[in-house]
Image (tube, rainbow, N blue to C red; front, side, top):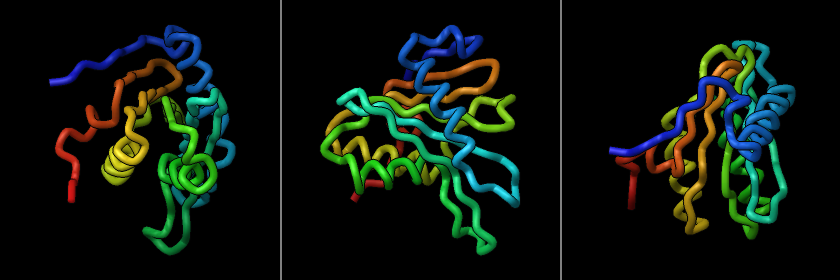
Length: 146
């Protein structure tokens, strides 16, 4: 069993989470989605207070595309790994539904928490609501472990 927070509007999120959700929504402009037209943006707040963003990227050669979350985490690992991620927000266009990570992204989020040695707050936003968990482990209780 796990707990999560649910907000009936993104405006009801705590200020820092709301700002991160807004950054994720803005990051949808970075998405390249000529096939699905489903743009996903992700934004991460680092321990230093910096924010990094990424969008999903599609390819004609399926499944060569990459989700916004994994695009963001790859950027973090290659450029900012000494600055732990404290929170990630995910949003989409169209945004009528909360944007939840796929199974691969859930596992990679768990791997990232393990690598950095601390949990990542996950904010899953829509245009009309948001849900928040305190760790990706709540999204993937049975992670793959070597």
